Amino acid sequence: MMFVDIMRRELCALASTLKKDGVRLYVGGGYGLWLKADHLAANAIETLREIPVPRTTQDIDLFLGVEVITDPMKIDAIREALGGMGHQSVPGAEHYQFSREITTPAGGSQTLKIDLLAPRVEDERMRVDARRIRPRESHGLHAHVVPEAETLEEFPFELVLEEDCAVFIPHPLTFLVLKLFALRDRLSDESRSLSRYHAYDVFTIVAMTTVEEWAQAREIRNRFSGSAALAEAEEIVRIHFDGPTSKGTIRLQEHVRLAEGRVLVEGVVTQFLDDLRTFIGSI
Image (cartoon, rainbow, N blue to C red; front, side, top):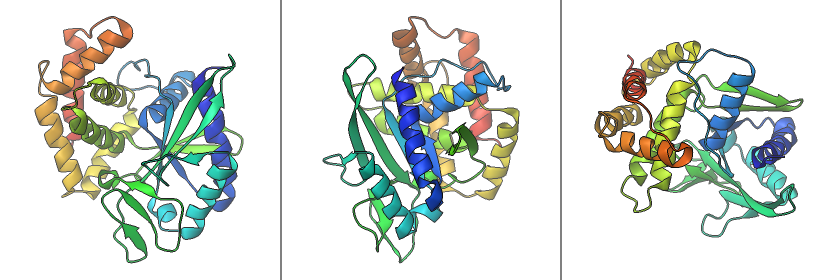
């Protein structure tokens, strides 16, 4: 059994436990992209371009929608479910990162980490600072606040993994905004690994967008016209994906070279950049 299958089992155990509490889980990050790519390929669903090979990951990024993050009972249910599965709070990121050791099929051990994230909600019932958000009446579990996730609940992709296990993948436009912000924040790191991952995720998100999702992006942008996050994402694309020598494109090529031992040919890069600029700025 591959580690991604172990992650799937863990995710389904959590989702099925929380189903009775009405908790909807949005799976972001590299694992969310892996799950969606696997589903699209298995069901021969047409996408904008050929689906790239998803990168591997050992983390599960779980986004909580507004209805969940503002409900103390739902937050308490998540805390109890994670504790019941053996997850411990990660030091330094207490109450919004959790992990536990997983025994691999080979008899080894790997750490599986779950990050909890949520859009910013300005409400007197909430405790919010630059890093964390939680209801005032709840204790022991927060989410990492992500202001750029404001479109999280727009046109999510429902993924039924097994009976009593359904999760949601954010819409590609939402995913793009999240990844573009993450890329920009990591471009100056001495270690380029994270910025390479984020650049490759941007490439993957665009390639596996469906025709329906491409049309939905226009609706999202119209609903959120004037959004500072969307405008900033468009600016990140303009600066860092302006051509083959822009930093975002270079990081993308570095990832492909290191992970696959090849480079993307000029036509594929040009096509990707055109698609990205159209998608992120399509009004």
